[in-house]
Length: 263
Image 1 (cartoon, rainbow, N blue to C red):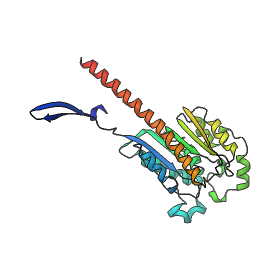
Image 2 (spheres, one colour):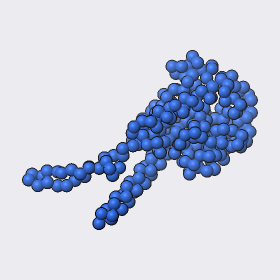
Image 3 (cartoon, helix red, strand yellow):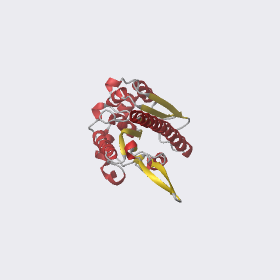
Image 4 (tube, one colour):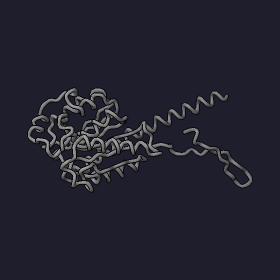
């Protein structure tokens, strides 16, 4: 950032003062939001606006088979939707003012599952998952609506090791900061799935776990929605502010070293 600073002269009557303009960071954090199955990007627009107010570039989007492409939902597969996520991530990272070293991904339910898998092939610094789901690896290329729900629920009630599931395997390799949010009365993603995810994040830099009391999977009451928004924004602010503080300290150290070299 030092290279972006420029010296100026401030005129004060017949006198002049030396000054330096210090611009804001040339690049900012990028945050990608992934909605759940049968939802759309509207689930995250309001939250994206709150986090964007922190100075981040935020991107929401509609997965294939949703919103404008809802007519194709019956044929949409997890593999296809993962490709959607990869393309959205690459678009965000490719934006001029986004720092590719400071990318966060936030997903709910099915979107949380896809977000976890994304970290296997793309750099992610912050990962926020709300009620992340689990699916059998063998169903990866099947239309999601054709997946046997009874067999899937039986699978979710089991204790799954990271090596037995691609999403959990990605979590086991993840070394960034994690927010994991669960609903107390979730009948779609049972508590065992949350245990599996928490266990898998053994190598995370930090793991923040929160449970929204009384809440169902869809957060169908406004108080539960508000609770999740508060948790998410607070968590994002914590790490974004800490990251920026570290960068300021590094710039100050660099400026001090350059000043010492000149003297």
